[in-house]
Image 1: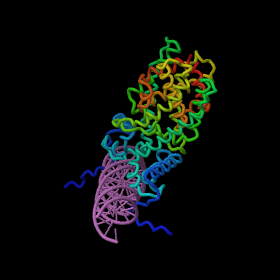
Image 2 (image 1 turned 90 degrees about the vertical axis):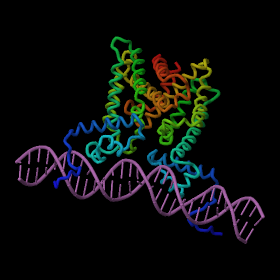
Image 3 (image 1 turned 60 degrees about the horizontal axis):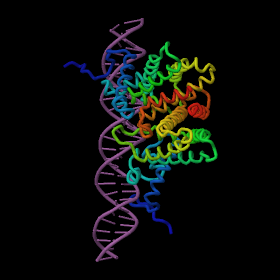
Image 4 (image 1 turned 135 degrees about the vertical axis):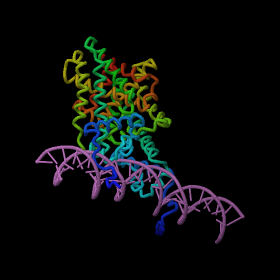
Length: 201
Length: 201
DNA sequence: CGCTGCTATTGAACGTCGTTCAAATACCGG
DNA sequence: CCGGTATTTGAACGACGTTCAATAGCAGCG
């Protein structure tokens, strides 16, 4: 009779901490992609990767932290998608339209995961996560660079970027929640083009 | 004539069904105003009005239904606020700016309750509540009427209304979640005016 | 008055959830 | 080989949304 019947505790050694964090983030992203924020739970997430919930607490943190990890990944993917839409050969105006197009295409391709970035509202007392500001400005700076030839004044350009960014966000947000289709049958991409073209004159 | 002490079960008779529904909606709105969606719970809501949770299930429904009631009230209040911003003596362009201003003022005055309208995402299979579409179009029709002299073509105007509406929603949404301040220090109302003025040319 | 439904109201229960605790195991530097 | 540290877990805790079965008041009717 071996005294060491495996009790289940102790390290497994089949991945390091970073790999485990990535495993958690990917599994969480998959759950959200299939069932939205409501489908993401600690116990379900743990079951999906074959671990006990406590291991996630140990390596990542609570559920809010998991959501932040997924959102960080999403913003990075969005950034890459927008970079790919910019062409040095195109006019600034065409590039602006292309970026808007790429934004809405990204949202349409992965609406649940994108929505998570904005559905998640942090507690009003806790400060804003610093990586979010960085990832966000990193992305909006793209738009800023695109508009630089059209709006030379830095202040004016910053306001324009923020306004256009918010406009695109509004279109995408209302679109994914099916609240835009109530108003008009046009696909949101057409409205985004309309927005950018009319705003830039 | 002292009333008999409550013995636990049975009707109280101090309000009819409609009054009780209004009581629930107001208490829920208060909870959301103070602590956001996360602060709205069935047990807390019941405790706030001095009833057992089951009474809310009996008279209103589950928590999603309660949220819908609050949101219906909010859209009605928003509609009234926008109506008050329109002046028959003003130009269409000034009226459009005034409506945008009133929208953002409404959001700033009650950010948590307004956010509830958009934070609440219904299950993807369930159909859209018909009262929402009515309340929404009732409000956007206001904007449509304002823009009628400026954009005579109905199709073009409908697209413009939807785009502007989404743009305002985006500004308000990013503002209440403190994600707009990361991009620019301008108050969202300035950006809203910028949006409307540039969009309308 | 008594009877009979009907509705409002409740305490208790059920299952689930996020999170924490304490213990047990494996790995690693001495 | 040994002690500390990191990983992993089952079990427990409290709270949650929701449902169930029972009870209390009320209205109508004889």
